[in-house]
Length: 390
Picture 1 (tube, rainbow, N blue to C red):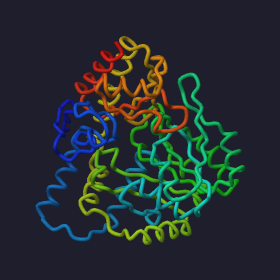
Picture 2: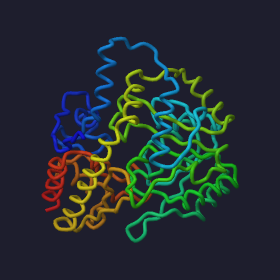
Picture 3: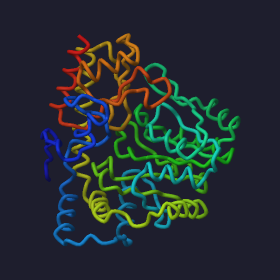
Picture 4: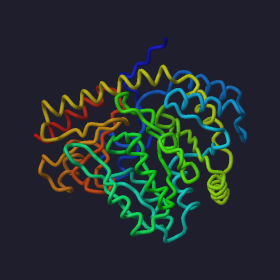
């Protein structure tokens, strides 16, 4: 069995990396250490690289589609990992999950309609709503005893009061790291079913749920919602393939699928990136060994951060994640304003993290750290943070 070296420090500078090459353009000092955007500093699995090399050596990159074996590979993955049975006709391929969210907003709502989200949440959830002239409704997650929970009463009240048409669910939740239980998903689904709310479940981080907190696909937890829901998946986070732009969207309802596809047609999009399709199929077909080792390494990174904060920076609290490869840090113990916290992180610690306020809700005192990097880089970041705090 091949052993992968996740400790390898790979120089990503001067590769047009959004993470490493655009600090100045994004308003940060040139010498910041970046742990912000959600991609990994790890090479993709060897079977993916082998498949891409073969495609490159062939040398022709024309318009491409997939045949039945592409779906079969995906179905085997979701069946084996989540016990979820899909059907080939459900599958719609898009260049990304955010694109799919935007298409869903346009397909299932009209300008002025209300769309509900659960802050603090991945910031494109806001823009796909407001940029399409829909009305944003927020059901804030409740942060209590170091853990986030759903306010179900407020969830239903907001739906009724605002005549919500669409709900964007983040499952597992980015950035807070919750992996919603099957019972929580059923409760959300029952409310949405009752009030005719279409549900879009972004499950892009599903492969990073911890074993003690297993991920349940929405449509497995709530099959009765099949006619008014879609599930968004992608190999991009799982195998570090975001730049190849392939996502797999599952829409069981024929009417809903037709509406979604029509909106895609209006956008002028058809065939996906040919290399992305190759990489996606190779990853799901033969990426298990890499992912298992990656999981173990990420858990060790999380343990390192947990121990470092406990022993050397007790003013900062780790919100224990149940999944994802993020550390969501509660910095309220530093006693700083949002502006002061930003100055500490960016200018004193020389770190580029994702500040909590961009996720909305009551998250101004939080910071999101991406753990998917070599431990030496993570240790450097923690030391810089400690020195800045003093």
